[in-house]
Length: 117
Image 1: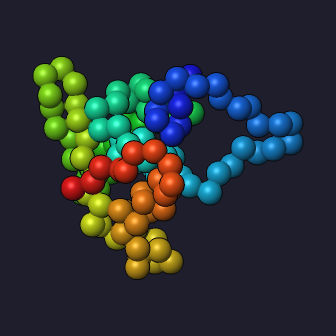
Image 2: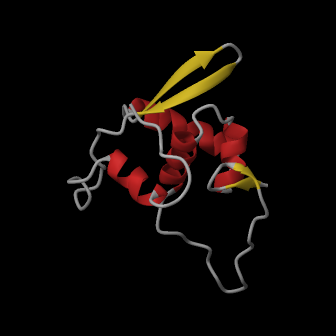
């Protein structure tokens, strides 16, 4: 399995019976966190880290690119992802904060700084 922090191998915790397994952040946020922490990660690795299908990750990446939040750069046979951290969050309740604010909050006191443009 992939470590959600580093997007590398780790054991996944299965929700207890009766636990719906919901989280406070969306899959879009989880994908963005993985790509900001490790810009050269494969979408397959992101899918494992987030716990969704690779196809769902592809759709989310496309939506983030269309929104101008993410930029993909081709490096040989691989992709490198660049997060545009200056964009405001999309919901009116969070619009006073930027993507960089969110990534910094999630990464505070833990591991590498998220990489944004």
